[in-house]
Image 1: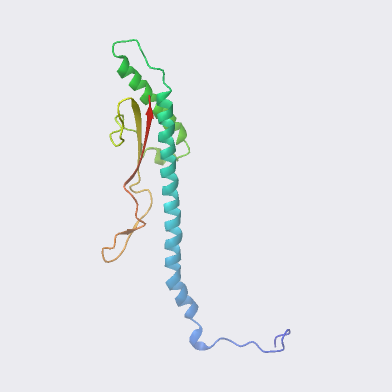
Image 2 (image 1 turned 60 degrees about the vertical axis):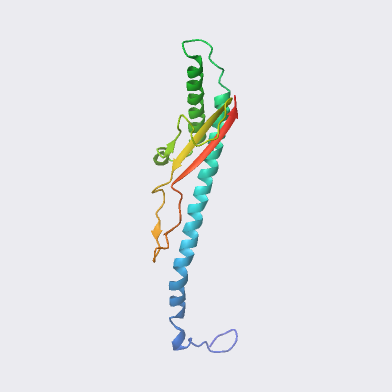
Amino acid sequence: MNRFTGLRLTRPRSGQTGASAVEFAFVFPIMLAVAYGGIVYAYIYVLQQSINFAAQQGAQAAVSVVPISTGTNPAAATASAQLASATAAINNTLAWLPTSQKGRLSIPSNAAGCNATSGTFAVQVNFNTAGLFATFNLPDNLGSFPYMPASLLACAVAFT
C-alpha cells in the first residue's frame, strides 16, 4: 500500500510495456540528427564569419604598407609587401584554428574571385571544407546530411 494515499500501486497494462522503447527508437535518430546538424552548421557559420573578418583585417594591413619608391620595379615590390602584410594579418586573425585546419586555408595572390578595380587592393581567403565533418548519404538519392559547401570564400577590398 502507498503510505501517502492509501492506494495500491498497480503495474501498467501488459500491452503498453514496450511502447516507450518503440517511441524512443523512432525519436532518437531524429533528435540526434537535429543536434549534429546544429553543431555542424554553427561551426560552419563561425568559420565563415572568421574568414570574413580575417580578409577584412588582411585588407586593412595591406593598405597600411608604405609604398616602395626605390628599386627596379617599385610597384611589384609594393604589391609583394602588401600581400605579405595581408597574409600575416590573416594568419594572426585565424590563429585560433586547430593546426589540422590551418592547412585548409589558402590565400591566392591574385584574388580573382573578388571584384577589385584599379586603385584598390583585394584579399581573398578560401577555406576547404571537404571532409571536415562526417556526412551521411540519405536514401533514394536525396543527397547527404548535413549539406556542406565545398569551400568557404571571403573577399575584402580596400582603397589604396
